[in-house]
Structures are given as C-alpha cells and as structure tokens.
Image 1 (cartoon, one colour):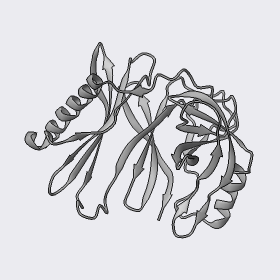
Image 2 (cartoon, one colour; image 1 turned 135 degrees about the vertical axis):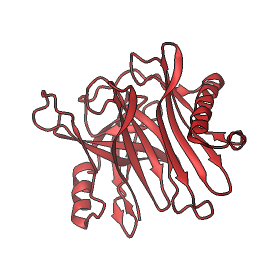
Image 3 (tube, one colour; image 1 turned 90 degrees about the horizontal axis):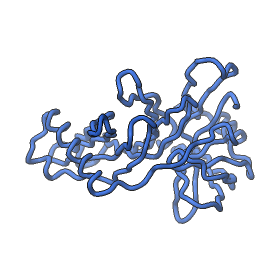
Length: 271
C-alpha cells in the first residue's frame, strides 16, 4: 500500500460526478506494524498556491484512476477528468470524474486493490427502523433537557440502515432537528443493536443559536463508511455544512467503550 492514500467524498451535481478530498491517510513505511494510520488534512487551513498546485499535480492529472465505493463496497474505477482547484477567496479542492459503472459512488480513494472493500449492506431505513431512531433521539434529547412538547415538533431526516461492524447487526444513522424561537438543536445519531435491542452508539449534538442568519450553523450528514485503516472495522465519514464553508469528520469505533468517537475533522473548503 502507498504510504499516503487520499480519500474523497463523491457528489453529483447536474449529472456530473465530483470528488472532494476528505483526508490523507498516512500509513507510513512500516505497514505491518500495529501503528494506527494518521489522518491528515489534504492542505493546511491557510494554504498557499504552491500547496494547491502540489495537490493538483499529485491527485488530478487527467486520466488518473480512482477507486469508487458505496456502503464500503468497491464499485469499480473512475477517471479524473479535470481539476477544479482554485483559491479565489473560497478554497475548492474538487475535481470532475468520469464513471460508467453501476451504482452510486459515495467515497473514492486513489488506490487500486489496497483497500478491497466488502459487500454493501447500505439501504434506506424502513419506516419501522426510522421510528426506532426517532424514539431514541427523543429519549436522548429529553435527558438532555429539552421540552417534551417542543420535541414533538422535531423532524427526522433521511435515515440510513447499514452494517458497520460484523458483530453488531444493523446500524441506523440519521439526524433529528428541533427548532424553537431561540435555537435549533441538531442531533446526529447512530443506533446499533445490542442483544436484540437498539441503543445509541453515537449522539452528536450541534446547537445553532443564530436562528435568523445562521452564522453558527453546522448541519451534519452521513456520507458513507469505509475501512480506512485496514483493521477490519469500517470508519464512518460525515460532512458538515457551516455558514460559509464545509468540512468532513471521520468517526472510529472504540471497541472498549462501545461508542463511535471523533478521529478527525478536516478537508472541505470555503471562505
């Protein structure tokens, strides 16, 4: 495996596929050791034109192949078409790709067979599964201290049902939003089965207090899953939309405490 592997989020806009770097996974030379790979941002927050040019030359030469994944499964390969890297007051590190295979790519890497992936179990949650996540979110927010009547007006967004760990059954991932006159509470949650019952293994709450202009907004969305460090357990990738920027977060499962923990935030762009 290369010492450094770039991982991209894949998005579609006007029937064109784009890749946006999430993280550079540094495996290092001693890849048979037990060192956990480092997660590094594609470029520093205050990047220079020279750094952007190095990223472009490394990742985005026309015709460069990238592996594309969905639900942790490798769908095939795509080719870099053209770079969109620019820094005109708003950093953009994306590139256009050409993909003629089946399925909807959600993540990509600049490796061939080094990250093999696995069969995808990702699908939209059933109404019953979505109801389970909604109820767990309500219980968590009640314990947090929100008013029960206010919570009844909360809104559950799209929920993903997938298997993140082979020994845990299906996982449910989604966001529950509660809006009041003074704040918007957004709870991003993952629930997994434990002895036949679902319980939250991730509960990340973002509070927006500037309801009118949204200057402190953070909207977290589930992107996908992939075993980035080759330890047999998938990591979870989420995207975060802010007031004038966006970023990505990687969550790694802590097998001792049985919860998902923040492992990295970076990538993205904006002002």
